[in-house]
Length: 219
Ligand code: URA
Image 1 (spheres, rainbow, N blue to C red):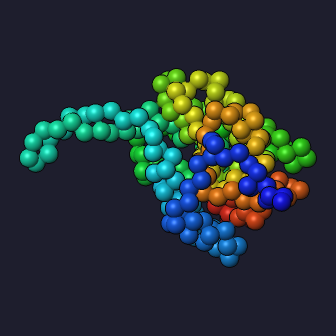
Image 2: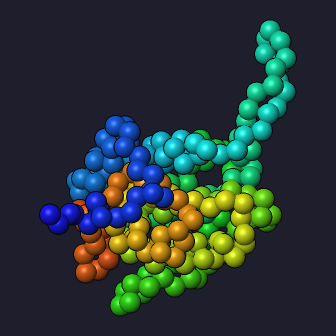
Image 3: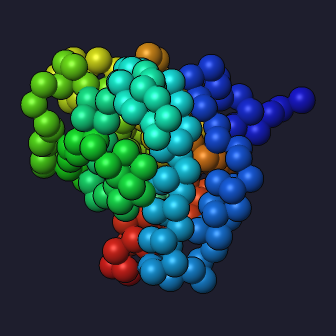
């Protein structure tokens, strides 16, 4: 029996976050009646919840502290080693939520736009912290659609040889997952949903529309 595209996607490197809170907030965000203020609030809350999942296996180091009763060794994440690499512009909508959970993380930006005819990603900006070889990088874009931007961003990030690299989104299309995995099978994808497909303009179906426009109120 033919299977829907999402079920055909190889899922070994896809972490699908199915937590009810994540799914509930994502459902609210998808609704076209939700305006920019509500959309941004939900995106921020979802980013915090997704930060919890995407950092699950981050290395920790032990520090010595003193409780009111005695000294002890206790683990902390080395937040300065973490970089959130926001893929402009929609990635910026997740930064506040991510930074609330990991306030010491560094932030980088990758500026890419989609050529409307070819749907290929064209780079116009790239700025990362120094010392990337010692850092764990989380590339952030709420939408993994065709996968072209994600591949271009990860190509560029890999040229800096970070200690680890993963991709965080809210919605992924099966096409985007296949494209990203074909180019970068070593990069895990963390997503809150795997939708059905793309339309002819490269938008995710059923999706949530243009994330950038909905965050910034540009339509
Ligand atoms: N980018 C968006 O903002 N929405 C989509 O559906 C696809 C790409």
